[in-house]
Length: 340
Ligand code: HEC
Ligand code: HEC
Ligand code: HEC
Ligand code: HEC
Ligand code: HEC
Ligand code: HEC
Ligand code: HEC
Ligand code: HEC
Image (cartoon, rainbow, N blue to C red; front, top):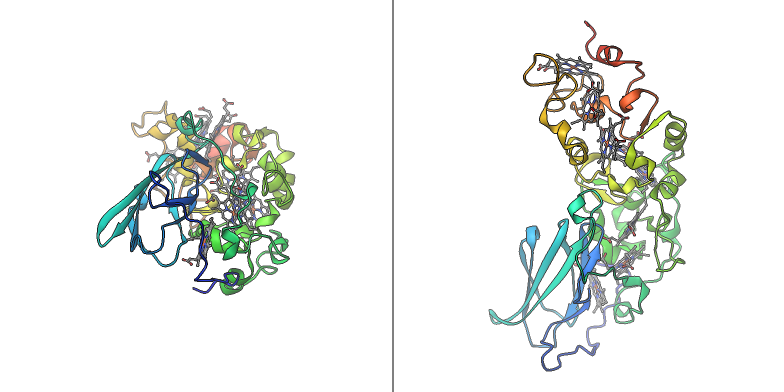
């Protein structure tokens, strides 16, 4: 694939350090000391001295093992990260023999999974864009341009967005290094059109920081939701803290609404006792309790029954965050059980 900004100069000689004891592989990013990441993609750039290896083999947990042929002195790729500790093994091979090996330790932090909330000792957050990356700008552009500042609004999306992936690849400064970030089935509007700067401020310190709490950023565009939810009587715990990204990826994910887990699993992650099936009609004679999944939602046609069939994940005017206007349980039941 052709990348617009890449002016690849094959004959460039870089100071690829292969000092005694340091080995052949020099990792430009990330640092060897443990790094902390928030989400599931890590970009890696490394080099091996000319002629010292023909192939680099990468083993990264569920990402499996993969080989990259060595062409030139910069080898760039991404690996998927699982929540918690990830050990990424990188081996350099010459004629099928391993000539050097490094292991990078990266901790993917997670607010959703409490055991991964706090990184282990010795792990530090590193900021790629806070340092001078002259070595990278030999081939990649790093300064954002006009395109990157294109605004996006949920009200007019996708009419005001770009319809061609080719155009995005050619015009986004961020795409050449971060393209894996949006390679999921569900991509958030602004991320899908590479309007990265609508949330990441290039003038902040460290560069590209996002304002906290999330709700400040999210409501900047989701005005309709803010108006709908803020005036309501009851608010869901995690929404009250303003941490929208505890449940939603700001970029992309495997699940509708860019959720980190499918709705049912997401809810049960924090409310495990509701995953047992003994919910809603626990006191009744039914041994099974009320179904909360694997049925059709009788109200939201075309969708499956889930926790969000009865509860609004954000806010509500009814008790227990019911997704319907209802004073008490019987009124709620009647929304789906017309005969009762
Ligand atoms: C010699 C040219 C060159 C240099 C120097 C270079 N890159 Fe790259 N990089 C590339 C090319 C070419 C690609 C696109 C590869 C592709 O499309 O699979 C790329 C892609 C990437 C990717 C995305 C990989 C993927 O699979 O999505 C990352 C991350 C990256 N580079 C980081 C860096 C960093 C960090 C530096 C500086 C330490 C750097 N690059 C320096 C040529 C270079
Ligand atoms: C030369 C490749 C390259 C380009 C171009 C690039 N990035 Fe990055 N960026 C990286 C790497 C490598 C990291 C380290 C962590 C990772 O892989 O996400 C990173 C990290 C980040 C982070 C986390 C904070 C930090 O500094 O570590 C943000 C936010 C970010 N990039 C946004 C952007 C945006 C927005 C653009 C476009 C204006 C962009 N990047 C362009 C390579 C690049
Ligand atoms: C809707 C807002 C939003 C948009 C749009 C957005 N981001 Fe982010 N991004 C965030 C938030 C929030 C974080 C988490 C920051 C933190 O916790 O410090 C983040 C984190 C990151 C990180 C660090 C990931 C990690 O694992 O630590 C990178 C890299 C990044 N964004 C790149 C991009 C790129 C490239 C784009 C454009 C395709 C983009 N972002 C678009 C909100 C956004
Ligand atoms: C720059 C404007 C912008 C910002 C900031 C923004 N969004 Fe969005 N969001 C959009 C657009 C555009 C869409 C796509 C609307 C569509 O598909 O019709 C969207 C869609 C969504 C959807 C899917 C809605 C649906 O019905 O499928 C969710 C969920 C979402 N955003 C959450 C967030 C969260 C959480 C944040 C803060 C981290 C955020 N957004 C920040 C513009 C934004
Ligand atoms: C506890 C997890 C959780 C938190 C926190 C959360 N959401 Fe959601 N959100 C969901 C779920 C689940 C859905 C899908 C509901 C469904 O299936 O109908 C959703 C749907 C949405 C939608 C599309 C549907 C709609 O009602 O407009 C938007 C937009 C959205 N969320 C934005 C946000 C914003 C902005 C925040 C922060 C203020 C936030 N969310 C916080 C779980 C959450
Ligand atoms: C990140 C953790 C987290 C996630 C994910 C989460 N919740 Fe909650 N939930 C909370 C917290 C914290 C409270 C407040 C606890 C309290 O006040 O006792 C709460 C309270 C509730 C309440 C009680 C409201 C009341 O007043 O009785 C309901 C109902 C609820 N959540 C439903 C859901 C549903 C449905 C989902 C999935 C869409 C979900 N939760 C996902 C953390 C979470
Ligand atoms: C068929 C509708 C329905 C479904 C589906 C449903 N709930 Fe409820 N939920 C209720 C009702 C009604 C209440 C009020 C208390 C009661 O009757 O048990 C409630 C109360 C709650 C409460 C707060 C009170 C308490 O008992 O702690 C939480 C938290 C909750 N539900 C979470 C969930 C989660 C998580 C799921 C998905 C696994 C879910 N609910 C699925 C109807 C539903
Ligand atoms: C969002 C819609 C919805 C709401 C609200 C709702 N239910 Fe249900 N209920 C269902 C669905 C779907 C089924 C499964 C029907 C099927 O299997 O054909 C079900 C099944 C049942 C069953 C049979 C359980 C079984 O084991 O087959 C009972 C009893 C029941 N509901 C009682 C209630 C009561 C009591 C309430 C109010 C507290 C209520 N429901 C609220 C959707 C709902």
